Structure formats: C-alpha cells, structure tokens
Length: 398
Ligand SMILES: [Zn+2]
Image (cartoon, rainbow, N blue to C red; front, side):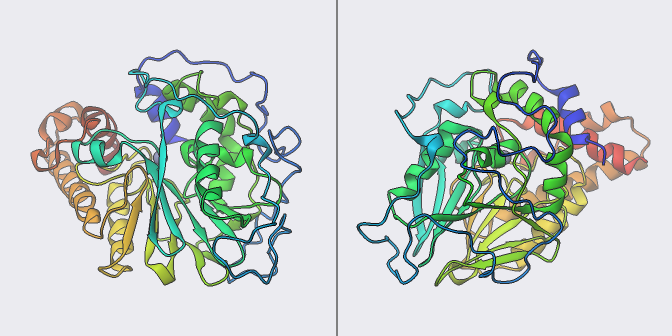
C-alpha cells in the first residue's frame, strides 16, 4: 500500500519543521514491538492479528481487575478496586493556551462527556457547541459504553493528557473496568492513546488499520508532530498491536445489557474505517468520515470522494431517524448531519468530472470548482482546494 495520505499531507502541509523520530520512547520499528516500553502498561498486548472475533465475545473476555461478575449495577459497587491506569497516576495536567499554529492544540483541550442514552456517553471538545456551527476545528470525539460487566472505550485520543481526561470521565461514572478500546482508524488522534492502556484492555481495530500502523507508525509520528507540534507528548507514543483485528465482517461484544459493535461500511477516509455502534441505544460513532456538523467537510487525505459518499450514504441508510451520531470531531448530531457531507462529495465529484471533461488542468479545476453552497468551514482553503479537489482530479483524470 502506498501512503498517499502521508505524502499528500507532507507535501502540502504548512511549512512546519519536520522533526526526528529518535526521541526517547519511540520504538523505531513499529510493527510488533509494542508492550515492553509502553508507559503505564503492565504487559504486552496479545496479538491476534488475523483471528478476528466476529460474534459476541465471551471467550475473548479479558481478565479484569476488580469487577464481580454478578454485579449488575451500571455504576459498579463500593469496595471494588478501581482499575489502575498507571499512565494517569499522579498530578493532572494544566491546560495550556491554544497554539495558533496548530489546527487544534491537544494540551489546550478540555473534554466533556454527555450521556446520550442510558450507559452510553459521547465525549467531545468542550468548545464543540460554540465552534462547531462556525466551522472551527475541534479535537477528536470519543465515547464510552457502560454495560453490566464492564466498559468499552471508543477511541483513545492523541496523547496522555487527553487519554487521561477520557479515563477520568469514565471513572466519574463507574468503577467497572474498561474491557475494550475500539479505534475507528489508524489516525493518531484516534488511536495513539492505546499506548497508555493497561495490558488487560483489549484493543480492537480493523485489520487494515493494524497493518498500516505496523508498516507506517514512524512516518505517522513525524506527520502528527508536524501538525500538532513537538510539545504535545506525541514523542512518548509507542505502537500497539491490536488484540482483536476486525475484518470487513465486523465485530461485536456483549458488555452485559449493551452491545458494542464495530461495522465496516466501505472506504470512509482510510482503508480500515470502523463505524462503532451500540445497537440497543441507536448511538453511532463515525470517526473521521463524518468529521463534524455542517459546514465541516470531509478530509479526503486518501481521495476516493465517490467511495466516501457511497459509504456515508450506506451508514446513514442503516440507521433510524432517532439515531444519535457522534462525528469524528464534534458534538453529537442527528442523522441529517450526513446530508451535508454526502451533498458536498457528490458536488465535488460532479464538478471535477466536468473540469476533466473540459480538459482543464488541476489549477484551473481548483479555480473552477468552488462549490459556494458548501463553503463556510474554517479549513476550507486547505481541505477543499489543496487536498480534496487535487486528489479527486488526479483520480478522475487517470
Ligand atoms: Zn480525527
């Protein structure tokens, strides 16, 4: 697999200084070495790449640190030992001011949680209600699901600060242990926090996401430090091999009264996007393919506008009108939120196709395909004009 996302973004990214990857804490060769140097880890995760679990998992239930199996209380019971996250022991971090050179500044973000259905929590940037409608960029959204037997995390965030905020939000609601952590993609802001999980938490991601991390972790760290800076703790991330590598058939696990499910609907932004769902609650996390409410538009770092449109429409059509949708970088929205992104993608493909048919070159295509109905995103000039139009042009003019 080529790395168009990285090469595109590296070539086109803001001219921030690239940095080395030989800092302390990085495993230079990323594939299967996770574990021994993991901050806060009590052991190396057991790799099961290639042996996905495709049904409700009881056999895969990890050893836990304190939940009594008979406990049916969502909030846990007094006297249980709280699961230990060594990475989060000690003093909490002071939030910094945002750095205007970054799209968003991880160490400046405060996360909030919202119970969108019984036991089902969305976690998102505290600026979301203010920034989202203005099209301003927001931190990664996450979540957690509390069943009678334990908890599943959705995403693990980009660095220790945000990972530990997520854990604090979980432990404010329950003493039950985290059993699973599901990543919607390999993107570091969704998955780097895996490095801080104790060894008894099972990491769940698509097998192609696992393959990407195994092959490109080092380049990915360079790319993320270029975009988020060298002062955000990214240098302490180590790659983690998933315990459960999900195929296109999907995966689910019974948490006790609630199910956590990860579905593959097609190419969404990367080759291994998972849409995470709690079927009983009609709550869905999209990851980056649906990045936020309008006027945010998809980031086609790996192109394939037409496929992304088809995938998003398929996800939308799989849900009921009552569904709660947690986008990749924003507050929970309703089903209609898909329509803006799908409409944008279809207009993008149509506009670029017309330009190709008229023999325009790529610069003339960028100038011609302005899509005024879909403007408003603060990152429009970069995402639309520098990434989306050129990538779509390259594919349609082949
Ligand atoms: Zn993201």
